[in-house]
Amino acid sequence: MTTALCPGSFDPPTLGHVDVLRRALHIFDKVVVGVVANPSKAPLFTLEERAALVDELFDGQIEVVGFDGLLVELASELGATALVKGLRESADWEYEIGMAHMNRHLTGIETVFLPTAAEYRFVSSSLVKEVWRLGGDVAALVPEPVMAALASKQEP
Ligand code: PNS
Image 1: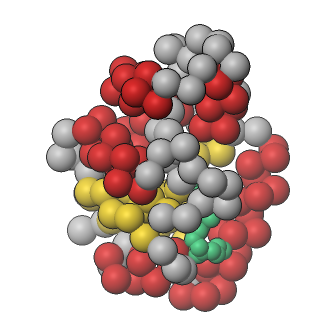
Image 2: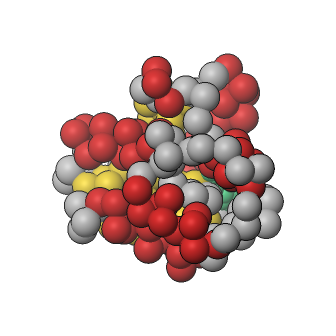
């Protein structure tokens, strides 16, 4: 049985995330999303909110776990076959390749990169939050439950 571990901040999940996770489900027997407890930037959504949103979007098809600490330790606990990450532009590659090498150095785990669907290659959680905070329309970039969750934050 093959298991993909897809880690990230998911603050909030976007349609780009959904696309990558759906495609991972076609390749691996099982997909686990690892939602990092403390992202590098202060999150808009709590860990519980981010994990619940991912869970709601996949309706039990994937497992969602929150984690703090080293990603490779979570991967070992889960018996993950590989880490799976979406890649948008070349800047993602620069950021991700160092982590892929480090994670492989630590435990030997491989990272599988999936190119983000062309229509979502400009979509990031950070840009979604910035546009939303400034009153822009992000409805085409995030799933409906995320729009509802953003509305509940009532920032704009
Ligand atoms: O969605 P993000 O913020 O780009 O995700 C980054 C994430 C969570 C994948 C990365 O920060 C991570 O792996 N954090 C866990 C801590 C860790 O293992 N750091 C060493 C990475 S080589």
